[in-house]
Image 1: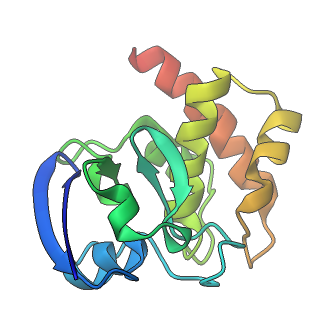
Image 2: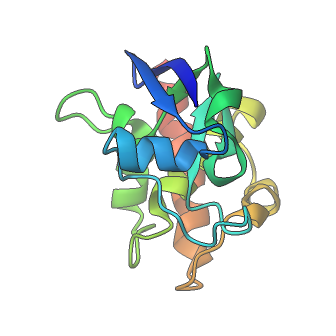
Length: 157
């Protein structure tokens, strides 16, 4: 067992977990933050993507102990009250949501893409989303949403 201290969505958290516990299971099972999904449990699909110290990571491939002392942001931590994060709003407006299972991971990855590339072009977005799978196979609107979200994030600064 290990005591893990981290900040999750701006709230300090201290939790005692087994050494082999994955970050996704701490978030979902212990903290009841169910926005990040367990899709494949092998880091192939990206449905579990969260931000760890400002970078997108697949939380099913990170031990909770590796997040000790880190700042974690989940999709639940993006909106400010009733106001959606610009990327969340873009996914809504551009119909980047289909069944919604991959959406939290897509949004967290999209924000990371924008943080690293500014306003990316379509080819960059498609290349960067390679590790996030949409089982509905509807990437067209997801790509449009990321590009629109980038513009909204820039305008919000």
